[in-house]
Length: 73
Image: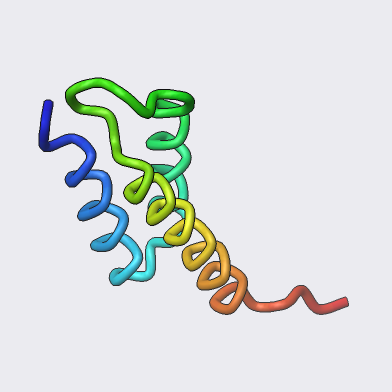
């Protein structure tokens, strides 16, 4: 259980480096759903980790926007 939060961070980082932004975003959203409102407890993420994941989400969304070609009409 103590490795779940670090595993989310590592997985998101690996997927982002591989250019798999949709999958990375999926795991970020899964993290948010799992830990929404859970800021205490033995295995809950710290406020710093929650903030860091929020930043990662922003970066992944920006990366997805820049790698997706604009639709042509």
